[in-house]
Image 1 (cartoon, rainbow, N blue to C red):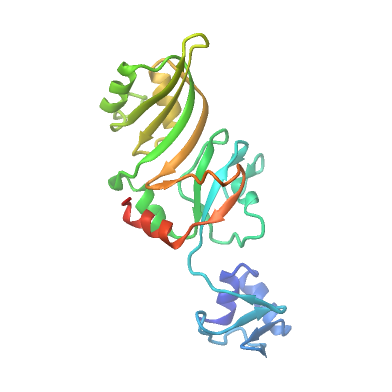
Image 2 (cartoon, rainbow, N blue to C red):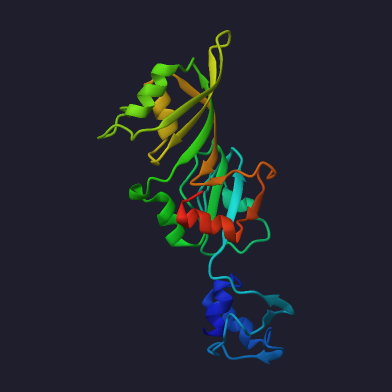
Length: 240
C-alpha cells in the first residue's frame, strides 16, 4: 500500500493533505523519516508513526453504540446531532450505521466500515431478526400476537412479514402495555406503523438485539465499545 493511502485511510487527512504532511517529514516508517508520499509500505508489518504516534492499520472497524434519543443516524445533519458525534476519539472516515434508528428511538446500533457485514444483516433475503422493546398506549392481547404473526397491512404494497410479539406487561388502569417485537424487515417506521395499524401508539422504542448480538447491559446510554472478534464472527454466521 502507498504511504499516502495508508494515512488517508487512517483518517489523518485527505490524500492531498497527507502528501503535505509527509513532505514536511512528520511521518516515520520503522523509525526512519519518510518524505515520499508514494513509498510502498506493508501496512500489517511496518511501523508507521505520525508526529511520534504509532498508527495501527485496521481494514475494518466495528462498534456497538447504545444510541440515545435525540441523535440521527447520518454522517452529517444541519438540524440534529448525529450518532457519530458520540464516537469521540475515533477515526470516523468511512464509517456508516448498519441500518437506521429513528431520532427518538434508543438502543443497539452497529457502526462499521464493513459493507459485507452490513449486507449480511440488512439484506431482505437474510431474514435477520431485530428485536425491539416498546411501551405502548393500548392493551396488547393475543389477537395482536396472532395479527403480527400473520402479517399486518401498514399501507405498503405487501403486508409485513411474520413477526413475533411477546407481551411483557399490561396496565389496564393506565391503558398501557410493555412488549417485545421481533421483526425480520426494516421498513420505514415499521414498528410504530404496525401498532398504529392495530389501533395503538408506540410511546417508547428501544432496539435490544440484532441477529444474535444483544445490547450490552453494561453499556450506558450514549456510550460505545468495539465489537469483539467473537461477536463479529457471530454476526456473519447469524448463528447463536
